[in-house]
Length: 249
Ligand code: CA
Image (tube, rainbow, N blue to C red; front, side):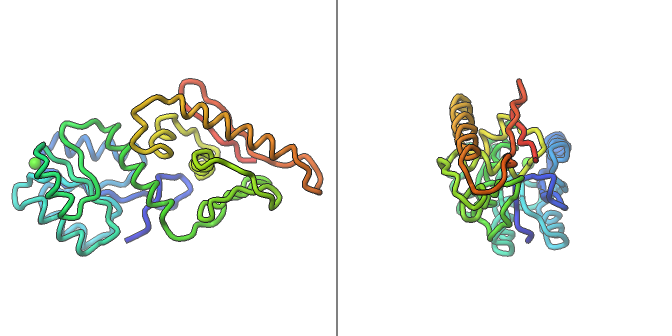
């Protein structure tokens, strides 16, 4: 398996998602929606087809319907979990009984969505899972933006080797923007990636955290570092009605 990471234009390859769904409408909707949001989906209508496809090519994410024509989706989950410990498995189920959800999680699923669900919610869940894995994953190269260095592995932000003190959420907000420097990042994406499941709530917390982050970067920029000014510190541009963009210097 390749190491999953958040969708990112800097990645040379996209996140591979195997959709296992026998319903044509849902399958097509998922395939189109995932492709339109930067993922690389493949679609299998049967459990046996999914097992064959997973053996043929590496996948990062499995979106698995439980009610399949040829076999129980739980068996597909168990088999692929045993073969691919790092695979992110999300069960798509019309079964709303808790017992089925528990069975799914016991079979190795990481998460589940009860049908009908919106594509927006599915995408937000995927981003949250992938982001968590990106933060948990093996060391990543520090990101350099002008004179600012963001070391996600060490959770440190430095300017000319001096620490820029950031609160945990300020750091994560900066990290998400830095990984996509130069790209517009929507408020919804930031809420999903920095605040996980709480993104359904108020986005006021995003404004407060953003204000804090900008203040700390401005303060850091005004310190003397014994090197010639001006320091090259990236700016965060507000995109009205959309979100933010971190400007690469
Ligand atoms: Ca089905």
